[in-house]
Length: 209
Image 1 (cartoon, rainbow, N blue to C red):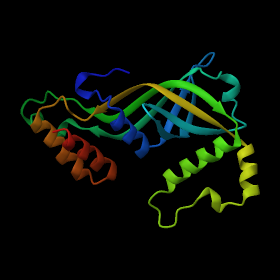
Image 2: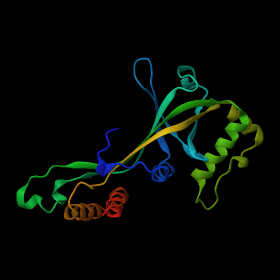
Image 3: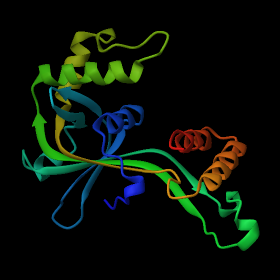
Image 4: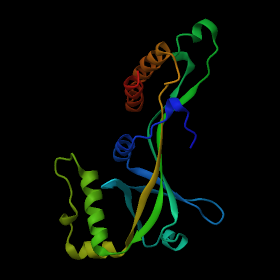
């Protein structure tokens, strides 16, 4: 991924925060003709100095047949994004020499893929995934809420995938290459948009002023 210095974000803790906030990622691996891509909810797991992304697929998904254990994979995550109109730059009225752009937060995590069929591993994974997704709910659902025999059948229908992270690349494009007055103009414009996504981008830009 191209990372201009102004937008580079490679701190593991910051990338982890993005993944936890936006857990639906793109898992990509090299196919024979085109890349193989799957949209999957993933959970970040730390193990000492190492980190992994855990996910699962239906047994009907033949990724496990297409990819060998230990093959390289790439997971992609996206956070806040928003279109930036040149009308928000104060200088546009004076000289007109401005063009639109798009701000965004993305993280690319490279690693090696490992597959799991063990029922205990799968159950631990589902517990972790559920706990993360249900966090903050008044009455969070738990895997143990479902009957044991029902869950046993469900476990037979999936297999686990682990991406052991070897490299992290982040790109937080939040108008850092613009003058302060331009960034403030963008923040003001985003806030007037009135959407949650616009406010998230405005908050990101303000955090980097």
